[in-house]
Image: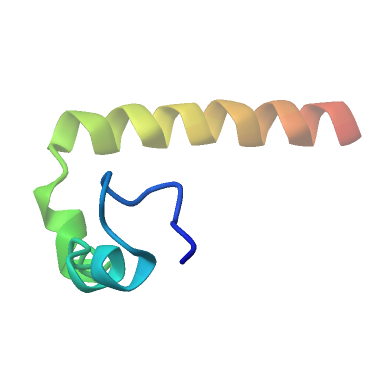
Length: 59
């Protein structure tokens, strides 16, 4: 009988798959509301700086 590398010792591959943890929930747009405002501002500033540098380099 073959064994998965991720299986617990003494468990066959079928038992390990049956006892596997559930998959995480898929990404939803409502999850973006959980991000703090200061991270939105910081990300916006970084995006603007990178965008301006790209335009300057190609201009």
